[in-house]
Image (cartoon, rainbow over all chains, first blue to last red; front, side, top):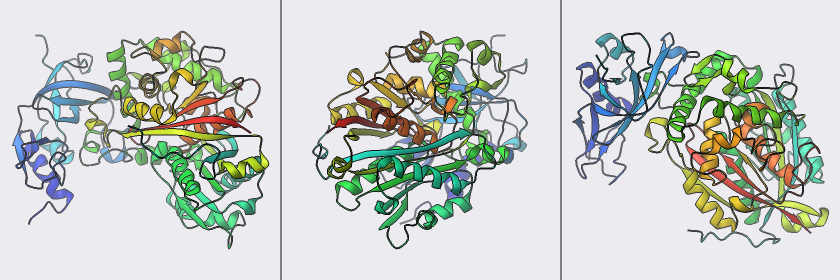
Length: 139
Length: 403
């Protein structure tokens, strides 16, 4: 029986989807559980028939922070930048980046408010394959 | 829930803390890693009333500052340094980050209870305060953080503190002043602890709120200071303790919950694993928050502590930061908490932060703290630890035994 043999196989499809501007999560074909972060075995039924599933990208911002000092050197981004934890409307949750508003700040974000997946540009995704989210703004 | 076969109090399988040792925490660049460790070990052995040759089991708590020193711990350098080569039965390391001291206690108590060790020395040393800061930032950005899923968003330790604090303040409605008062209360305790990093410097709410934002809503004075330090304790069986001591400290029960690995996967960021662990610990001990005389609970950020206090039932849900603001947990307040100053004011000695809290709990229950901060006739203490990205909540229910 085949199984996911390394972390490249586990993470690769997620990064490839981001590069296409799509957000996907892992799905268990045996019990239909949506899984994030992807695992080698389904955490629910422990099966290994695992696939991918496109999600709406809509979710709720559980919490967020703006890091202003002390970015990891390997991350290679000059602070400030914002990180959020998003619970997708399909259920799974994940950590990602938050786009700043037109004023260049993240002051408009609030816990438990809606956010939506809004992919970063291709060069950014290629270097740092993370999901980016934005809050709908009053115009 | 509790059908755990806890040892009969006072029996040969009932583990007893009989001695502690500690050296001051802070920035001590000329103090070496092994020198610190041997000094803390020697102080604990002297405090225990044993001879160094009575130690037959070493349980080593890892350092986080560097691999070569870690290798020295793993490969029994400490056995030689303490003159125990040819005598010690076993030397091993236990590691679960900030909850290591709790799990090392479990291991030591289990070895005693099962008759596999007589006198166990648990010892820790850390050189974080003198280490290269940017190297430590990078190291802490991969500890408890999945590189492929959260490293790609630039997550690091202060950002995790910011995420948890933001969620806690949102859920509880706590104000920045109330959050800052947590750090102020811990500083008041640290001023009474000669081993605390910040024993000589006061702190006000205004100073905290005037410091720069680091990871919103966390400010610089709300982040822990990396420190050098070392601590140790000695455990034996109650039957051995009785031969030399009039009093000792036993483990009435424990509880634990490993709630997650990565911050992004914790479904209850405002609770972590504390409520579940507390039910188990209180059931096992037969006593809980109402009966405790004091508590020593992991506090690398204010919200990490307030969340724990609420899960432990030491504050009502959502009220812990306001309790701090009302001085309930300050010296002279209603409930003594983190009486050494905690990680936030005694110094964050890596894995040693939880160790320092545990050692302070034992010290308080042995009635060996300096008079200024000794909790009068302390009998029962709740100890709480947490490791990694607050992956677990570990609770030790400690009680004083008098012969």
